[in-house]
Image 1 (tube, rainbow over the protein chains, first blue to last red):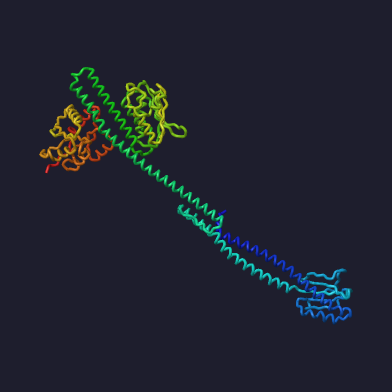
Image 2 (spheres, each protein chain N blue to C red; image 1 turned 45 degrees about the horizontal axis):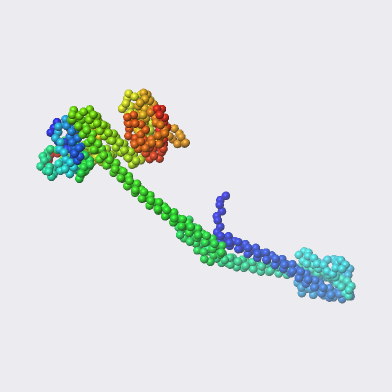
Length: 482
Length: 149
């Protein structure tokens, strides 16, 4: 069913006032007309009764002296009353004595009688009113008089009356509509103003406008007041919200600027480290080697071993710087998300590792077509570290197994790298992803302790999680999501 | 070996000594002209200042260019070398400590022929210099020098 078009308040009020006025007036008219109908008819009957009485009195002598001509003459006077259709004087026995007919079609009853004691009887018949009265002379019933009158005058009167009523009704309605228009205008003005404001509000979202409430009725004043209060509150909240947003924006801008500055600083720092921090190491290593090469024969075994230590430390420092720079690079590198086939990456990395130590017996199980959404370069670095670790920490075992695959946990895709190597004690798992944190001695497994920190940073930059399970000498499994 | 010189642009005296040692260790006997900053490098190449009376037809066979240099840096030197028709085709190998992506990109962008990172381990450095000497001094055929005006 289609929604009905909403009628305006003004239309409803007009209809209401017209309906109320019309109903009231119609009821009043109906009451008056009914009252008048009854009273006029009663007056008519009374008139007829008086006429009958007069005619009866005038006909007494004619009846007593049996003078028909005189009685007919008396009745003929009725020509002056055009409403009388017929009249007849009857003897005491009820037989017609003398009659009057206004026109030949009229007729009079052949015989009349009245119950003893009754003086008069009226009834309506054939649209006329009829009356029979007793004629009494000196206390003796002498005869009867019958008179029939039409109701034309009555109906004419009623018609006039109805016409006047109709005129009054229409006039009153017009006045009512006029007055209600006036009153409606007064009542509606504030409502319409309120509606206009509300419409403007929804269209412009301008909460600073206010509805005008002067001259409104008490209820309207309350409504307008409440509406304005509400607007005030909305405006205040709006302002507070806007201020909060501006403040937030300012703070975000500030933080962004700070972050950019920090990033620039980090970049400058990395750049400087890359250029300047390695140069002295090269000098230390270079001149140590020069000393060993050019003056080695003059040094004893201990001195030579010290130089070798210096060179080893220098190389190690070089590696540390390298790893730190890589970690910093991972943090500031721009991310470009794309679909990355991690299986292919794992194959390539393990193939490279095999080339470096082709004599090792490592069973590599790589689940095919494992794909991730992420930055190809960063994910490659992460996989490099994880698989490199698996390779490194299985190196003490005669044969080893390295697995890469994916699984579902808590509805999300989890990638894992699993080995059956040295593993570690889970009690130290908290240190696992810290920079420069190592769970194995340098002599046992070489490394700088930056690799897993790098992996964690990459995973975090992808919005993922990384965690591990391990057991000493049984292996380790690293899980991550991106 | 030809008698053409190698131009070494290097501000760090340690690196200078180590590079010279590495060249010597590899029996690379070319004369090495060492300049210590970008300005001096440009003066040598374009015969200005103390190098004004240098033989204009003698151009280095190879330029080993460091990036971080006082006054005018290696990138600017490279840009000027590539801008000038007389030096445009000189082989320039960037020999520097950094392997920053931005440096490599900018180096190749400006027309470096090669980008070699000086390794911390001196043994590796000697090996790298050996490879450079073999390639750029023996194997590679340079573009003919334009006649001096």
